[in-house]
Length: 355
Length: 275
Image 1 (cartoon, each protein chain N blue to C red):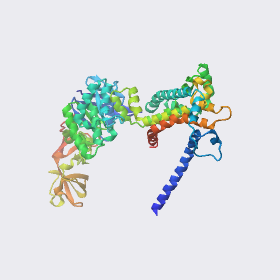
Image 2 (cartoon, rainbow over the protein chains, first blue to last red):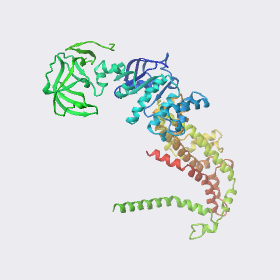
Image 3 (tube, rainbow over the protein chains, first blue to last red):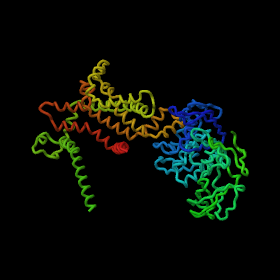
Image 4 (cartoon, chains in turn purple, yellow):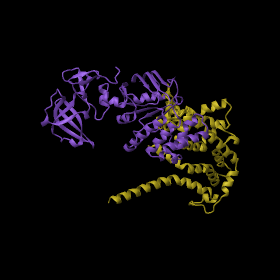
């Protein structure tokens, strides 16, 4: 068990910084997800915690120990890689036992530990097989078992599910979450998939361009995004952004499911009651229970998530309405959130924000 | 129509392969056949394809015409000794070239490639002088030491090591494996087909090598099989070709055995290479 602390951590490759002065506390026993678009520095950050990349500047602590100079094998961590990185010439048993043997654990003890872990991840019948004789899901389990058997303080996972098919991925997501609860260790998980981030993490770190954009619990992140980037990165489809009325230094945003579409004929809505914009449905994506309607309005193109029951046809004229309290206000240049609207006036209520 | 074209193409391919196979196999069969003939039958014209009487005594005669047991033992010592040293030098060198960034790496690897292009005959004189300075000429060391590091081996292994995914090595580092351990327990097993192929090339080359033992040795105690066989050539009363060929059969027998055992690995190595 250990918390992980990053202080002003910077990483540069040939004078180009990919991680820029990161300050982050990953609490002991948390399931922290680093999420962001590709190239945002999330994997590099994880690899620095693992010790696979050197830290250009700053300090990384695992528990009470500064680990900057410690080799990966001595950090009491385990990592699961995207492509599993199993040792192809060893069978499943040896793959799991390799790390134990390198720590000088006796053969007998190794056997007990490996068999115990194999039982947990359901690999008991496969111990004699080579990785090439296993399915993708089984390889993933071997990779997990190899990490678990070392009983590390911190688990690092670099997009471990992205090579699995959708069904298996959902299943593994649930299994990983329960594994985390069972083990109680600190998990640090890197993904570009916001669904994975939202469903698994209890603390989500949104990164972009080497900076942390926001650190928050999933619901907080969704409901109280601190800036435009988070607002548009978290949530599918992303938050709609329209120009602010009256204040040119602001922009407004609202979630697609908070908007309500009204047929043009019934529009007796005034802007005193709600934000509204007239337009036309230009395309429709049916997701099942919900339908996404792309509406070209006088105030820009927006996406509205509506119940499939009330789905409008493409081409119908509509009014998009959003209650004022669901309108977020952001600064135009910096993208920082100012607050939410109350009536027609912005108010700076910032739940969960710190700067 | 299409099937006819396909079938005739297959036929042409087969004929081509048979011709090539014949070119390679025939001299070999001719040697084997001659090794079993009597001397009059060897001289007979037109020549017979198969011996009329199988003269097994040719082998005994070849074996007894010199200290062949000693030659064989020397050959084994030399070929195996070279092989072991080459592995011990090539594996770490190839690992460093494939996996480390250090100043002068490209220059050093360039040097390795240059060595690969220099034929042994060009540098045998300076090596001879050097070895004689150390008093090693006419010892088995003079046959082994000059080949202790193989540029070909380093080159081949480097390519194989470069194909190992980074993550596998990183996983091993996280598993607390030292560089030395990663090299021998992860990299070497993964490069096994290439190692076997290289080992085979090296063994065959040095087992058959005639030139180097000829210039480095002058007494039977340190001579190898090829030199021994060639001495059959100089027996008085003209060359006994049947005995000579029997000697050659003795020479290549171990290689044939190894080849049949390792065939699977050799084919695998080449399939990997061409990927």
